[in-house]
Image (cartoon, rainbow, N blue to C red):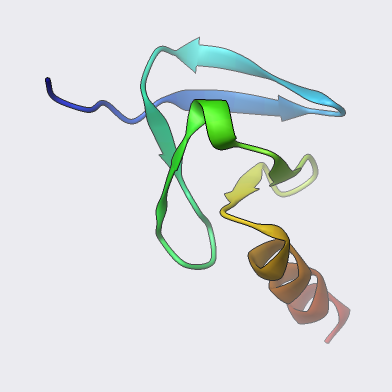
Length: 64
């Protein structure tokens, strides 16, 4: 079974699937995030994050 990268539109509290797929990439680490495990994203930047650690890192980078 081959995996396919999904294309999403991130909204507040949910995301819309534009193109079906199995995963998205973390904007910070580049790690694959299975859609069923996707919990962290930024609506304004339209980025996904692997965990709260990467989300916090992006937040800190934006404050500079």
